[in-house]
Every structure is written in C-alpha cells, then in structure tokens.
Length: 305
Length: 200
Image (cartoon, rainbow over all chains, first blue to last red; front, side, top):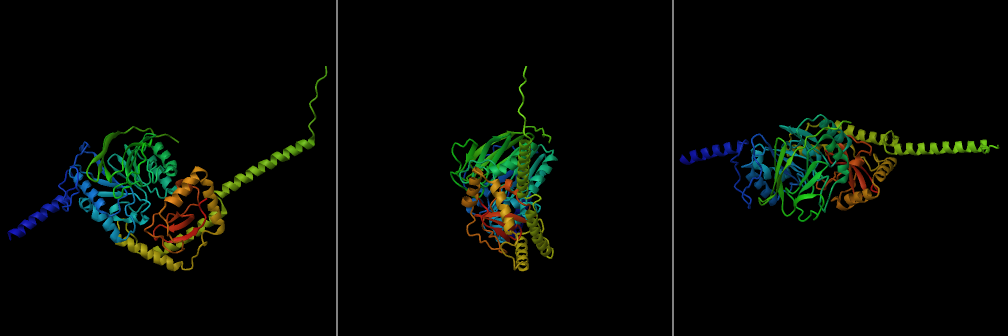
C-alpha cells in the first residue's frame, strides 16, 4: 500500500514538472545526460525577454543529435526559452512516419512535452509536405510569418524563391511595424564554407528586400558548422547548421566574411531579445560556449519607393 | 568677295541614308521584340506550356478533392497516407503520360534559351558546379509519372532564374537533375515531365 501511494505521488510530481513551461523548470528527463561542461549561461535572462533557440540541419536521428538535444534541455532549466527555430534539413533520407518519430519526436520529446514550439523552415532535403506536420508549426505553408512580442519572424523557403514568395515577403514587410525583423531559411546568403559557400543568386534577390525594410538578423543553415558573419549592409547573419551534422574543418581559414566560426563539433544557439539588444550564446555538443555577444538594434527608416 | 559654296547633297544619297536609318531601326526593334518574347511574357509558346501545366493541376486537384483534406497539424501517418493516395490516383489517371507531353520541343527550347541567357560567364560556372558537381541527385530516374525519390535532395532553384521562367502553379516545381530540368508535383512527388540538355 505504501509503495502504491509513493508511486502515485511520484507520478503526480513528474507530471507537474513536465507540464510547467514557464520560468526555470525542473524539466523531467529520461535520465540520459550528455557528457561535458556544466551549464554556464552568458545571457542576461531578463524578465519579459523573447527567448529562443536556433538549430539547423538536425534530422539524422543519430546519437550525436540526441546528445546536443540533451544539452539544449539542460540549458532550458536555467534559460526558459519558449520556442525553437529550425533552419531546414529537418529530416534526412526517407520521410515515412517512422522517420518523423526517430529523427525528430524522439530526439526532442522532453522539449515537446514542455510545450516548446518548433518553427521550421524547409531545406534541400525536406519534402514540401513537412509543412503539414503538427510539430513544425508551418500552418500548411512553405513560407510564413509569426510574431513574438515586438519581434517579427519570417520563415522563408530558400529552395524555391519564386515571384509569389518574393511578392508575399515584400508585402508583409512593408506593413510590418515590429521593432525586430528576423528572417530564417536554409541557404546562407553569406558563408565561408568550402563545401557550399555564399548563395549569391539568393542574395541577389533577398538582400535588397532585407535592406529596404530593415531586417535586422538573418539565420540560415545548410553549412554544417556555426559561423557569425561580419555585418553586411547593417544586417547580422548567422549560420547554425550543425544541430545534427558536422562538416569538420569546412570553414575557410582567413575568410573576410567571418567574425567567428566553430566547425570542430556540433552546436546550437541561444538567443535573448530584450528592447534593443539581442544577446546570443553558441553552445557545443559538449556544452562548451564557443561564441557569445550582443547585437544592438539600429533604428530603421524605411525607404520609400 | 566670294562665298564658299556648300557642296550640294544629292537627293539619291539622302534617300539611301534615310532607308539605312529606317532599316537599322526596324532591325533593332525586331531583335528587342524577339528577345522580349523569348523571355516568356506574352510568348505564345510559354503560354501554351503554362496551360498544359494548369491542365495537369486541374486533373490532380479534381482527384485530391475526392480525398480527405490534409490538416495543417497532421500526424506523420496522415501525411504519408495522403501522399501515397494522391500519387496512386494521379498515376492511374495519367497512365498514358509520356516525356514531351508538357515540355514539347518548342517549350523546351524556350526554356533552354532563358537558362542560357541567365547564366553566362562566372554564373554559368557556378550553376554547373551546383547542379552537376555538388548535387546528390545521381540515380534519380527520369521517368514520367514516377516518383522523385524522397531520399534524394531537391536542388535549390536559382531565384533569379525562377523570375524569368514561365510561371508555374504552386503545386508544381522546376527541379534540376544533372543536365535535365524536371517538373515535379510538390505533394505527390511525381515527375510530370522533363527536358534534357537544360544546363548550358
């Protein structure tokens, strides 16, 4: 009888812990912790901030993807991020029902159980049908917009940047009065990667739009490493494409584009936006902080015509 | 005091000059018009191609309309089933579809010209590198009414090219595979037609 009561109390306690998505959480884990450095948050963690994570090129279902997800979970206990941006290549290889489970749901189950939302963009390994998947929050669209407080997010489909999408993007931005405008998609307009490099044709189309409407920050993936690009025409570009794959040593040494890069292990980004500051911290699969800093938002005067 | 006389201009020479100027103007106008038509807007070949694609989309929309609608918050099993059912329905309905039904020879040539115009010099080198070297699309079978393998990557279409090609309905995608350009249904994954020698 005592054992039954104890089990009942434990079940209630665990259920309450996993359903609490606000504030520092005692998130329930499945008992598997990634090895590595203790949690060391460099972000201010202020009340009222918009807090999120950026990951890219995750969909492998490998042990290493699981390990980095565990590090994300550990950080969530001290930094209660509300949602995750996915840069595409969300599922590699086949996309049967079992693949969604193995390459995504099983990996991020503890976060999903805490009602953390994942907002996905499509990569070159992703079928368009992913836009219907309940946990990618794409509302059935290949490109979409959502807002969190004073921050506007634009998820674009860089696989197929056709006239319809360009027109949509222009119209939405023209009417957008948010303080921060952030775009995220798969292919990086600027990159020091040896395997792929900058997507100049994409940049030719999207960069003028970014500049015209004051997009502040762009996140991308496709390259399997982390890179912070030197500001280009006042816009900050980040590549976060090593959430499930790594191309070790792929960043070209001495690239004039690079402010900071990390290509020795997988990583993810923690982001906090508070008023005019965007703080970032990049954490590796082993829990090491490999980059951190703050971006101050420049106030934009939208050009006419 | 003698005033030097200007040489008299022969009326014949004036006429020849006039005709020459007119002729050059007409030639320039013709070339400009041909180029504009070649870039698809108002081009009857492009319009006919776009209509054939729309006819396919009408067929598949009619078939999809008879199936349960896929939710925006679908489970993976529902997504997988919807794709399979739509694929099978369209394959059955287009069992006689063959290469060249939509990419007729004149449409294929028009598209080749657009691609060739868009990619010159360094751009051509970069396109060939992306399409022919980097892409993991070996062993994608070129077969009309067969599925594009979901394990193969889908190459990014250059945005500047997409703005110049004949516009497609949202359900259909252009996709490079080696030297070839495919038309692929984005939901059922079927190759609905293809053209060869697309990459200059």
